[in-house]
Image (cartoon, one colour):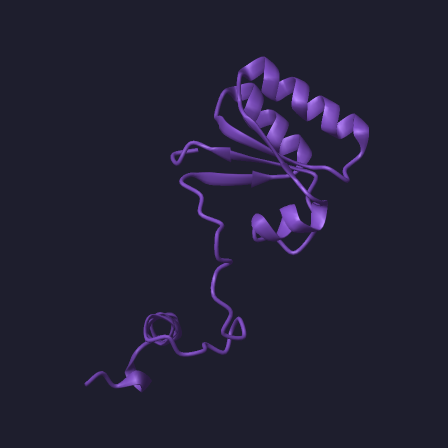
Amino acid sequence: MIQLSAVCDSHVFMLLFAAGKKPAGNGGKRPMQGTVFAGRIVAGTRQALREIAKGHAKRVYIALDAQERIISEARAAAQAAGVPVEEIGDMAMLGRRCRIAVPCAVAVLTDAEG
């Protein structure tokens, strides 16, 4: 049996999470179901456009309630790079899918090495 007092906090968190217990740090919430990414997510318009220009983007996510200028710029960059675009309902939803605490207009899925 493991003495939990002798194990550091991160190991306790991993043990609790693996056992299906509710860890105190995030209120017991598990990662969002249905959001599986095989790579690295880059959130934010400038960073996303930079990754598209470098050729690292595998897929572009655009929030439909973003400013039209941002939507058209991201679409044009994705089309020029030959990257598929997926539309997301709104910026708040895209932010949640990227696991950030703020709304997001554009995000990209990049290579895993990124």
